[in-house]
Amino acid sequence: PVRHSATFFALPHSKHLSFLPHSSLIRMAHFVLVLLLAIGTAIALECFVSKEDGETVVSSDPTWSLCGMMYVEGGNPTLFGLSESIERLTPYENLLVNSPMYKVKSTCFNEEHDFSALGSRWASKEETTRCVCRGNLCNGHKTISSFLGIRG
Image (tube, rainbow, N blue to C red; front, side, top):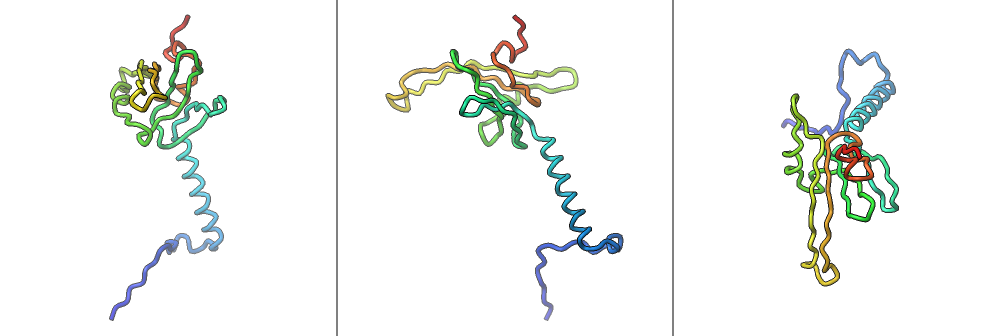
């Protein structure tokens, strides 16, 4: 009878690498892994992100495809990155046209949230302005006017 054995991981046996000692192969594999991780991080979109304590930091996530800013009148803007796992991005992606001759860099929406359906504790309506943009650190603005590039 023929017996088969499972191999979970094996370094390739190549006559071109046979001159290298095993430790050199491991170092080379480690270098390649670090290089691939660095390239993946370099490709990740960077956005300004608001922390709970009010501090703004630069953060990146390979799943983000847009950066955003939400502003409630009388408050400071909330900055964040957006991915499909957070919310459906198709409406934003459709508006942010990107062609060789024409680009929409950002767009903003005025939203009204009516939380009264959640109970009497949430009886008030809240108006917000949400802006989204595509590009590294494109959401680093203190006001809607500066986000849209309006000069006063």
